[in-house]
Image (cartoon, rainbow, N blue to C red; front, top):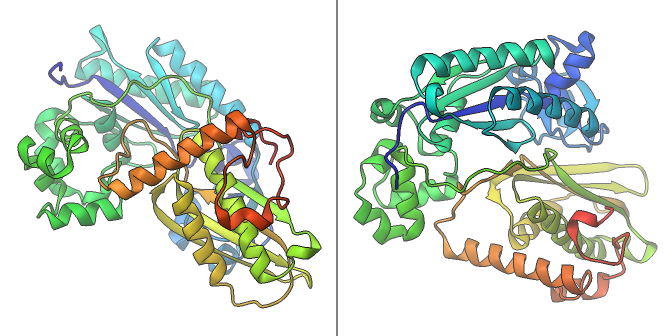
Length: 409
């Protein structure tokens, strides 16, 4: 394994990308609190927000109706995936003009591997400022980005998260101890609430404690993921190379108008199980993890109800189903349901970071992927949970095969 070197990776994160693109093309929205939602009705879910919305306490995943109550002046914008893709591709062209080693991590995150003459402080700083300028001039004058530079991709991302919006942070190896003293465990990409609790059980209460643990201890407690974290925290490049990918949206959802026989709360609950399974398959097909789940119900008399929950990053169908059912069961309305929907939000494209320390999560994730492979090869719902037995005709696929990338939900 090569020893880590400073100034080896540049991470670029477009700030509030969806909202900023909307403000770019609609100048009248600039300086105003806005939220972007696939469905702009009160039961819709806000998948992105502008920086002007943050002081009001607007969080990603909040329902549109709640956002309006918190901030009456908020502007709700229907999402335009094609528009975001257009701007994404323009940003990719800019990055490719700077380096042949640029890689797409998600629709709004990018990495450049610095080599040769670019691997020094002055060159890295110049490239970062030149990138910011080129994006403003060639893509959009209202678009801002945060940039981090460090020894590996993960630390470059950590650096990029430290100063938003429009920040630039250079993080060297000698600065790591001081940085880890200043952060919480959950500030580290890849450490969720549950993993942080497990680390605290081992007397690892801060990133600095994590950094100071001997390799022997981390390997003994956590196996291979422990070894990966030991080297990652020290700046070694241990994550799989990032290859260019087709960008992704910020949410994955599925809605369905219930057939008459399913228009009661008990039957609709079983349909939710099938919809959760389909959303999970689409999530994994795009190599994504979700950080939140939202469920909404429209009733026959016109009433709408919805609720959402932010979570640790999940990708397995069992976790998605469990959370969706928990949200569904909390509905206080006991009327005739007409339409139900599930939305997975706070999506992340993870490259080797989200290695679970827990065997049950890994087993569920692996089982979900095996079921995906079987259903893709032999047809949708070739194998399915017993709880779906009497709802196979509900929320049907629009084509007869199971490849989640080709299902017209």
